[in-house]
Structure formats: structure tokens, C-alpha cells
Length: 263
Image (cartoon, rainbow, N blue to C red; front, side, top):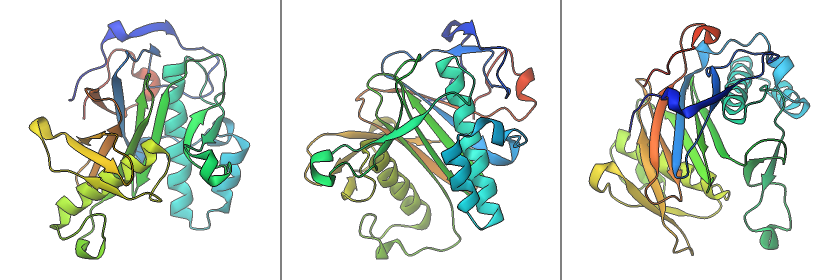
């Protein structure tokens, strides 16, 4: 599952006017059926230009977060998301605009919730997902079909999963793995936790199948290598998705011109 981003996947250079350094020297290309997951240590994301990159809505939401540490995480996680997306879209990180696409508008009446998607623009229509917990974040990116969801959770010392119906009695780490799978499927589907999700046992290669209540469609869950003390996974509707996991560069991003290190 862990691979390097091959130079053959890179095309034209990113715009030189980008106000924020990118982990990509050129535009990254996603083949059909590919899913890329970026593991991001938030303390490695330089926050100095967040106000130049985040859009007004993101800045307003960050300002409403009262706890300084939580605001710090939000700003860095969204800066990382935009930087990664800029590398795939071939634009400066501050350009993309987002909206939410409700998967069941006939039910919710266009509630403005659902899976975040790109507003139409001069870029490909790719799927993406963001999750952060503690000092870690995951960014998932998928080509067509683009439904993808990621979730990362910090492992807590003790937790009684028997109290959580979606997980049931499991040991601590297995419970967190199941919970991240439930969350990731809800994000990929755009319904969150509103519709119950059941996750099956690992199959060959660790792949797990999941289903939402009342929906016979399969969702496919892959574990993602995360820093010590965290677990995470990615969910997609692609049956044989080629999942690659990369780590956010720990050095100056502008110097990362030759390769992407694996987790």
C-alpha cells in the first residue's frame, strides 16, 4: 500500500506565483481507481501564511474556535488540505472553493451538509477528505469516481467500546480501528453518522467491507499507517482501489523537489 510518488505521475510545473510552498514540484496526477492519502504531522505545517491561503469562511470558522490549541489544529489542517489539493489541481492553494453536496437532497431539503466538494472551476473534479485529531491529520484524494473519506483518531489510554453500538465490545486499539472505519465511510458517503454503518472483519490484505443501513452497496476500508499513538483509515466505493500513503515532508516544503517519502 505504501509507494513513492513516481516522477512519471508529475506533469506541468505548479504556478510560480503560489503564495505557499507545495510538497509537489509539479502537478500530481491521479489515475482512475487511485487513492492517495497524506499523513500530516500538524506541527510540520508552517502556519505563517494561513490568512493568505484560507478562504473567508475558513478564517471565520477558525476565529469562532475559542480553544487556542483547537484553532491551531484547524488552521494547520486546512492549510495542509489546500496545499495538497493545489498540487493535484495545478493551482495556488488559495484558489479552490468548496461547497457541500448532500447525497439525499430529497430527504434533507438541501440542508447544506454532506460531503465537501470542489466548486466548478478550471481544474479536474477530484474527491477529497480531511480528518484531524490531536497533532495528526489525514488528507485523502481520489480520482473518478471520487467518493473518498478518511478518519484519524488519537488513541486514548482507556475506552469502553461496549458503550458504542457502532463498534461493540472490542479491545482498545481494535475498537479505535473500527470507529475510524465507521467515520470514514460516513464521510465518503456524505451522510456522516446519521446512517448507521457496519464494518466487517478484515479480509485478505486487511481490506474490510462496510455497509450503511438500508443500502446494499459495498464500501471498502483500508487501514492507513499513522504516527505512533494514532490509528486511521480511508474508505472508498472503488472495489479495487490502488491506495498509496505518503507522509507530509518534514523539511522545508520548497526543497522537496525529487520525491515524496512514504509513511
